[in-house]
Image (cartoon, rainbow, N blue to C red):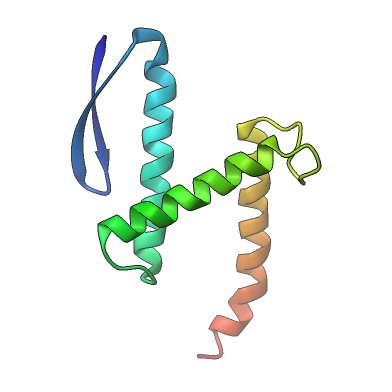
Length: 103
């Protein structure tokens, strides 16, 4: 077993996994950290436990969309789904930017 030191939203965790699982675990930690930090930075959710739950729900929804045979992401890899979601965020940000400038 390999010990991994991980940081999620500034909190340090010691994790263990097999050597061949290490790259995937590191990627999962980085992905969770980015999700949780984005939720925290948006300022709409307070408290680490609530942020963790919201991030977990978002990640679970992404996973279910990739597994759904009739879903918009069926047949795609996780990396391809991430690219599509990033593209969606870009479109949404561009659409919302003019409205943000009004306030």
